[in-house]
Image 1 (spheres, rainbow, N blue to C red):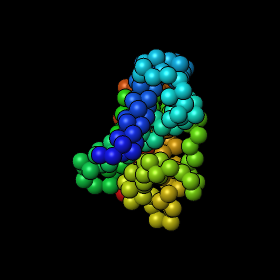
Image 2 (image 1 turned 60 degrees about the vertical axis):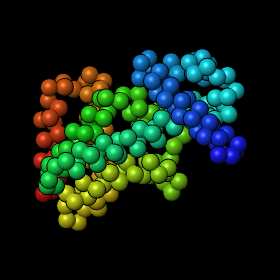
Image 3 (image 1 turned 120 degrees about the vertical axis):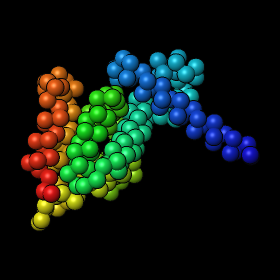
Image 4 (image 1 turned 90 degrees about the vertical axis):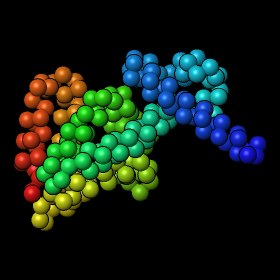
Length: 192
């Protein structure tokens, strides 16, 4: 391994450590607790080292969001691959999405609530975000119904899931009706 390759590997490892530490701190104490000073202390690097990787907290949030999008896409695909039939896939997708939001609150916030400097639904949208949407579209596109654009249907279904996730996490919806809400969403929106 050349010196250049070793330096690149070390840089990538530092970057992963910064993102993992930010994520851990956010999950434990919330995003307000994530500061470059605190991160530098936790990973035992100086703040200038952090700034050599990320220009600030916004970019760190963006990195966590991209990592989360890849994880969410993988989780949704795993959930939907485990069942047969369009209705079962959509139900598994919805439950998997909501479960991801509950199990990863700081990551979910980085993806959808906080400004990570990422473009959504544009030409320059990063690949992990496009892939997360594609993971939704793979199952939802087949139940959009005749004459309904699969992408638009996926956006509407996703918006409903996001609303359920956000309201449930905020304590605005009682958790004991989660499965009933998903069943209602699937029954009313998905054409099977």
